[in-house]
Length: 225
Image (cartoon, rainbow, N blue to C red; front, top):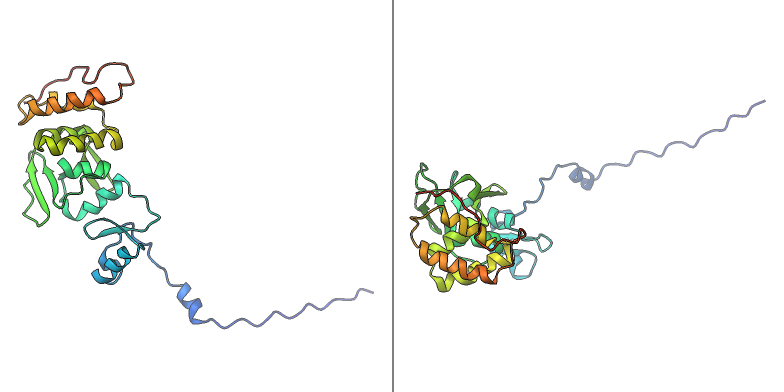
């Protein structure tokens, strides 16, 4: 004769607490860049930066201490000042690529055929011809390539200020000085071209040799007007 064993009764269902209900509410992912509106205002944001809970990138954009501040993060911090179809250029692009110099004014380039952006505090705009390979997309922001950035800095910036920026582009952003010289050669009518060529040529002497063994600036390229 088989004896059936009785199973213990299931425990009564636990009543749901407010904490259980709160855990069911979907929460949006925290933003990569933390701005004052994300933490209750500028005073709270400033306090978080001051105590080290946030690390300021520039302006009112900050990241958590565990977030690496990359070129893409720096580019995204400029996004509110970069209108569609414009490109971060000049020393602002140098800051994106290597973190220096941290200018208060953001320089944007509007290519030929694109309307000049309206005036805006903290932004300056200039028009310039840009080839597609001379821009890179970082996050959602277009930035001049490292080589085009070096050419613009060398042409448009006081040499005393340009030299440390160019060195930083070599050391921190992997600038190929020879490639920058070839970009400059495409524009034989570019304002500031002779001085820029001298700066870049001097820089190439101290730069690592090219992987193919050729001197910096070797090679030919078609010219642009």
